[in-house]
Amino acid sequence: MTTDSTVHTSEPGNDPSHERDIQPATPPASGAVRMAIGLAQGLALYLLYSSWTAKDGLAMQPMLFKPLLLLALFVPLAAISGLVHMRPRKLLLWVLALTALIAALGVYDVWRSDFGQWLTGDALAKWRTGWDSSWGASPLLVGLLTVGLFIAQSMALAASADGRWIASYHSYFALAWKLLLQIAFATLFTLLLWVVLYTGATLFVLVKLDFLHKLISKAWFNMPVSALAFSTALHLTDVKPVIISSVRKLLLAVLSWLLPLAVVIIAGFLAGLLFTSLQPLWETRNASKVLLGTTALLVLLANMVYQDGLPATGAPRRFITLCLRLACVLPLPLVALAVYALGLRVAQYGWTVERITGALTIVVAAIYALGYAAAGLRRDPRLGLVAPTNVAASFAILAVFVAVLSPLADPARIAVADQLARLKNGKTEAGNFDVRFMRFEGQRYGVQALVELGNDKDERFAAVRERAGQALAKAYRWDFAPVEEPKADIAANVRMHPEGRALPPGFADFDWRHVQSGMVPSCLRRKGESCDAYLVRLPGEKREQILLLGEHNPPTLLAENGQADWRVEGFFPMDQSCRALLRQAAEENRLQWQPSRQSELRIGEMALPMTKPGSGIPTCKAPEPAAPQR
Image (cartoon, rainbow, N blue to C red; front, side, top):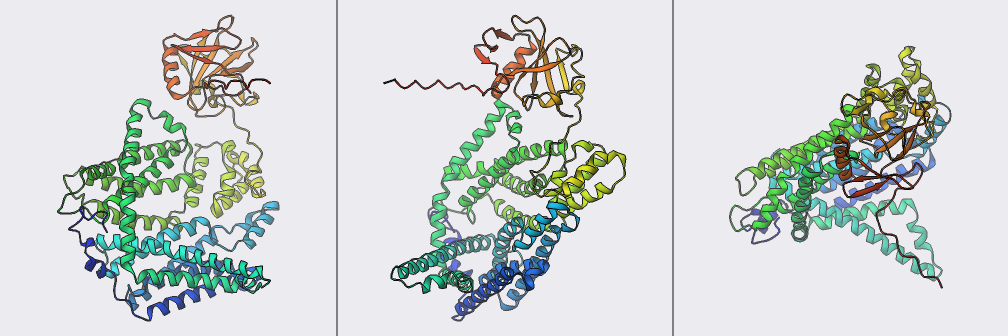
C-alpha cells in the first residue's frame, strides 16, 4: 500500500500480515465454482447472441433482451469477484441487489430510446432499422455501469472484509487497487489466449488443416471460452495477493513522480490567468471540460502519492509532501472557474444534455475540491481529511450515476423541460428554437415534445410547428435546412464609443442577414450578442467607417457606399493580447493607419494587415526560401 518503505514504514499496509487480513483463505473448490460461473456467463451470452442473429425469441422483445444482456455481462463478474471475500448470504443479497438495479436501468434505457411511434417518413424507417439491428444498450449506460460497478464492488468487498457498512480507508484502497489490477491482468490473459489460438490456427492452415480456424470462429466456442478464460484469470490473481500488492507498489512509486510536474504546470496556468484575464478561456467554448479534466488528473495523481494515508512516524519526503499539499489546494480554483464558465453558458442558452452532465460532474468535483482544500490548508502533517473526502466522493459518484441513468436526473428529460420552458416564457424566440436538439438529443422526451408543439395552436409557436413536423421526418441530424434567424436589434447590441456618439444613419436598420460574407460579426446577426463600435477614417477615405470589436469575432471594419448599403470591408486577425491594446488605443483615439495596397493597422510598434473577406489568415512565420533552379 506504500510507495517507499522509508516513507510509510509505520502504516499497516506495509505489514504482510495486514495484507492477509483483507485476503481470507481461499477454499480449494472456489476455483471450480468461479470457472463454472464464467462458463455459464459465456453460454448465456451465446444464447442471447444466437437469438439476436436469428431475429426471434428474446431478440424481438427489447425490454427483455437488452436488460438480460446487461445482466449477463456484469452480474457474473460481481459474483466471481465477491466469492470467498463475502459470506454466501451477503454475496447472494449483493448479487440480487445488483440484478434488480441493472435490470431497472436497462429497462429505462430501452424505454427512453423507444420513440418510433412519433416519427414519420425516412426517420421512422431509419429508426426501425437501427432498433432491429442494435443489440446493446446505449454507450452511456454501458460506460457508467462499468465504472459504477467497479466502485460499488470495491466498496462492498471492503465493507465485507471489515465487517461493517463503512469500511476503513485502508481496506477501500487495498481492495480497489487489487480489483483494478485483477481486471487488467484478466483482460491481458484473455487477449493473449486468443493470440495463442490464432497462432495455432494459422500454423495448422499452413499444412492444410483448418479445423482449429473453423472452431475458433464459431460463436458457440469463442464466447464461452473467453468468459471462462477471464474468470480463470480472476481466480489466479485472487489467490496470489502478494503479487498484486507488489505490482501496485511499483506502479504507484513510478507514477507518483508525475505529481510535481502537474502541480507546476497547473499552478502556472492559474497564475497566468491573472495577466491574460478570463476572456481567452471563455472563447474556447469548452473551458468547463478542460478544467474538470484537469481537476480529475490532479485528484488521480494526488492519490498516487497519498495512497492509503501518510505515515504517523518516519521521515516523509518533504518535496513530494509539499507537492501533495499544493495539489490538494489547486482543484478549488479550477472547479470555481468551471462553475462560472458553465453558469455563463446556461444563463445565455439554457440547459442542454452536455451542460447537465457537466453540472453533475461539478457536484462530484466540488466534493473533492472542498475536502482536499481543507486537508491541504490544515496544519495536519498526514492530510487526514483526504481519506474521508475520497469515500464521500465515491458515494456521490454512485448516486450521480444512478440519477443520470434513471428518470431522477436524466439529462435529456431535464434539458428538454428547460428548453420548452425558455420557449414558453419568451427567453428563446420561436424562430431560434432548436428542433434538431429535440429530435436527436432529447430522446423520447424531445421527440414527444416536438409532437406536442406541432399540435399546439398557440400563435406564438407558429414558427415552430412546421419545423417540428419536418424534424420528425428527418433521419439524420445534419439533414436540416439552415434556420432563418430573426433580425438582430443592432441598436441594442452595438455600443458606440466614445460615450455619447450615435450610430451612423441607417446602420441600425440595415439587415445583415442577407450579406453574403462569413465574417459578419455575430452582434449584427443575433439577438443578445454585444460589441463595441468606433468611428475611424482611413487615409484617403472621404467617409468614416466603423471598427467593430466583439467577443466572438476578430476586429472588423465596416464601410458604407453612400446609399445606406453597408458591407464588410475586412477584418484583422489577432490574438487576445493584441485586442486589449487595440481597445485602449481606440478609446484614446490613437489608432494609426498605414496606407498601402491593403490597409494596415498599427498598435505601437506592431503592424496588423487587414484581411479581405475570403482570403486566408496571414501568418507571421518567415517564408521558406525558394529552392534554387537548376
